Length: 248
Image 1: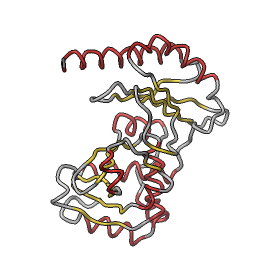
Image 2 (image 1 turned 60 degrees about the vertical axis):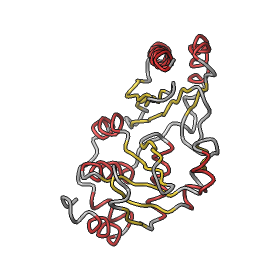
Image 3 (image 1 turned 180 degrees about the horizontal axis):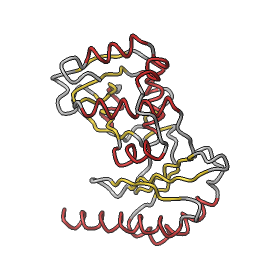
Image 4 (image 1 turned 45 degrees about the horizontal axis):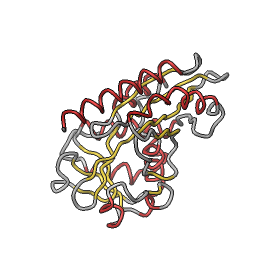
């Protein structure tokens, strides 16, 4: 039975990706995608250039269940079951025809690109960011919505060991940085993983981040931007938290 479900999941995801490639307008590119290993969800990063030659991005989520994040910057299509995939091309045509000027399209600021470099550097050293969820949201396990503008901002923010939260858990208080993490999470540039102590780890979506940084021609000299945006104390505390690792 488990093997049958796995085959259905893989077949459904393959059909979703094929439909996206077929139905995308010529001026929109399927830049990157990642798939869930537990359900039929497919997250696609779409890209187009505007008249000013700036990159515009869109997160397209296609899944067999509702999105649990409120105020996420994503274009979402819910397919009730694999059988509904026959309607997906029509649904894609309809939603993409309305999406050209939608607020779901976004551009990456220099500040946000600097955070992507920071996230990548932390990850290289074995660390990720995490928030401590309210007990009712944690226990509901995605059955109760998490509002990125309110619930997310009320949580405690930590830097923690990616594999063992018991070995390292450093609290950081910086609402401006936390707000940017919420935005990036809502765009699927971070994905989540439930952990002990009511923690929700925010892991970089590497399949998107690395090629996006290259496409944006982002400066790898990201440290001055982080200091400018969030203060020298924030940056020094981050260095101190990782003092036993390679200095960032």
